[in-house]
Image 1: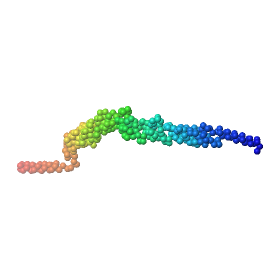
Image 2: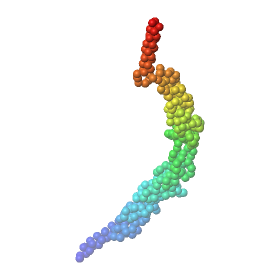
Image 3: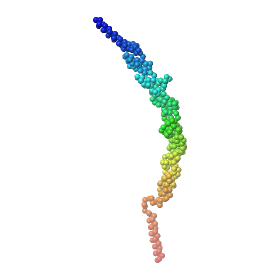
Image 4: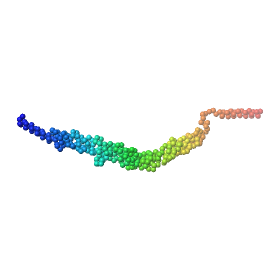
Length: 312
């Protein structure tokens, strides 16, 4: 081989070697072989360590994929590019810690929240708005007017606003926040006075201690004891406390006027007697009148015979 050829080969080799040295960045690639980075410094990845690890704890990530070995505190997902839920409880170092794959809050929820990722609100009636992360059950008791394991139920008719039931209470409850029960026999009572507005069937009065009259239909009455569904047959009056007139089988509840008299009687008070009972019977021959007529004929005949004797 001539000198010129050898010189050309050496120049090419020198050029190649010089180029390979320049490709590997010593600030990122501590080990370079034949122009390729065999290993990257912590915080870089890629074939030439050309990429910086992003959001990785202490900057460590996989050389080929760039996947963080661990996310920096406060981030999660595969690429560590999502902040942990803002409802996670703040740690002592003012950071919210969560599980990398699911985002589960690792140190509990902020006040008023529960659930795996603390995305559910605690019951409105929980004292101090504190509940368990796993199931939302209130840690302490419910505030006045609220009930249920999660303190999310109330006895207000419609709305519970600022500790008051502004639309009244559900049936059976009383008080400003509808936290007190009505009387044992009361179905519905006044929100503030607790006086009963509706008693159990068969009872009446402000405390439901009075019984409806047995003369009321179905033994039911209103809160004043009045039989609104009518009276049993034979009685009348607001409380069905009066009997219908004598010989009256059924009468009007308000006026007491008879609607059905015993047989043979008529009138509003059943005081008028029909002409006779016989007039209501089927027509039959009047045997009595026939006998009377025969007696009269015999008497007339006898009188005429006696008169003829005297004349002669």
